[in-house]
Length: 208
Image (cartoon, rainbow, N blue to C red):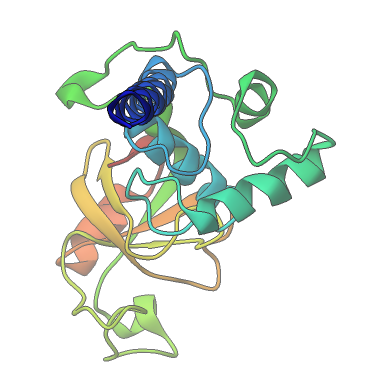
């Protein structure tokens, strides 16, 4: 009887070690950037979520957690790209997303190049001219209009996304506009003069 118990305990310990090894292997896979799948966490997952959201595939909140919504977004993206619908972000899917695991070049301010979008930026303010027919109303998200509030196309940059805009500073995508479609962004300024002086510029927008 004692021998049987010892055999069972040894077997359970072996199973535990195997399962532990599988967990460690899964974590290592995520950190190495070899492939990403449901259950993975980290900056690489957040990058995938950001790209999918910008392309119109809603991957959920960009929190770096590969959950069900991210999995569904990956499946939809793979289907549209003619890739095998596995829900796993491997080499081919990363290539289609424009992700390069070897791309680690930092930009000024410590932000990574992977989250940068080139956009045409214009300026607006609280005047009637800038806000017709919504003059006097808050931003689309309900936040008061103030410097740091910017308007974007939600299919490119979802509402609530934090940004760093070249020549402007940190901001949040909290507003929308009829003319703001595609890679366009409208920056709020405290005065009409500032908005007009900004004019129209092509700038780098970093998704934080």
